[in-house]
Length: 173
Image 1 (cartoon, rainbow, N blue to C red):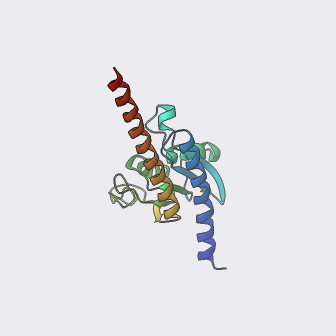
Image 2 (cartoon, rainbow, N blue to C red):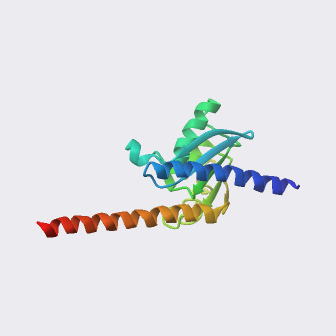
Image 3 (tube, rainbow, N blue to C red):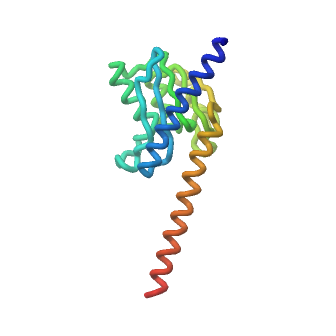
């Protein structure tokens, strides 16, 4: 097995864990995004979206994983660490990666509306910042995309059913 194949297998292994963590977010009614920070071959941080439950706009999967990793490593600078996340980071999370000096981010699905790792903008390698984060996209992209799409499809159906139920109650009045 070549080093490249080993890297691909490792990337898929950690992305599968991020997908599992995204399922925890979904079970809590959150957008299903999961993240894993790996440092020196060890998982040092894990997170999933918790913004709704924690009433905290900053409680994205990546931020949660970075916070845990910083505590485990005892340093907010996570030089040479890799962050795996199921969805392309938003501007806030990309900024946090730059500030934490993450070596690389690996993500699954692109986010065409708010993606800050190349889809909408690229803050990870913006010329004016003091640290550039390596980036790899598309690892288990289909699985990540399907998980997100299924969540939003279900959520739209639930909202439609709720609206219909409200209208039925109002019609009876």
